[in-house]
Length: 274
Image (cartoon, rainbow, N blue to C red; front, side, top):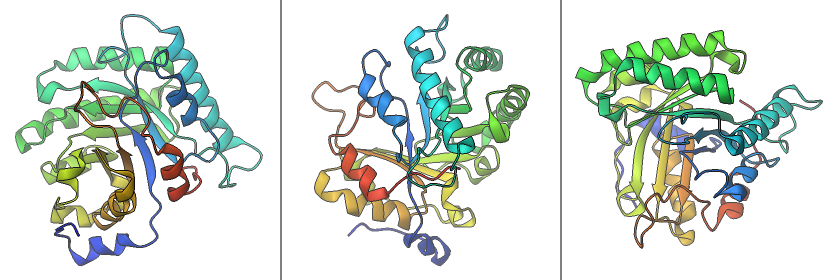
């Protein structure tokens, strides 16, 4: 049983809160065609997936990425505007997010905005994933400036409904003020050996589960239920669990599907449009 510290309000999420997937970034669609095709499969409870060509949008539009982006965009359109948009067996209509690497606050604002414009113009993304986001209070003003500008760019585009979505990829609990700077925070990213004994920050109880995401690698199939129980207990509504790990030459355990993908999809249940 994991040792968790959670206020009473947070523990109320341990019940029937539906989990959904956030995909931190599969390999290039040419190398991972099954992964990208699976995201648009009807019934997949996908909230969002990250497109990362070369630590950003790349230098020019990539035809394989354009195809994958178009497939996911069409799935979202069918889910939101189809004949039966409330049918829970339909695709959940997950958003495609562009990958912006903040380098812990070291990247210039102008570079990030240039990458953001390329993502919007080329791939019609519906938001951004801000990887390696700062966590300390000192970095918050710069992140607020960036997220405010990104929201404005998304609002001007015709690809992002509801103003788009911004996800801060901290990987740990940041200074609480970051919760007001974006739509969702990744408050855990790491191995199962750490996750099963992790603790949740008490301030997260002031926010609903859709504001938090957890990415965990090295989760054995036999511990899937326990991992999902931890996510609900800690108040995270978005997850990506995989049995892949960062050993044996695997540089990014999240770049491919977990071997139990179909099983975890069936455990969570069919997707519901956001």
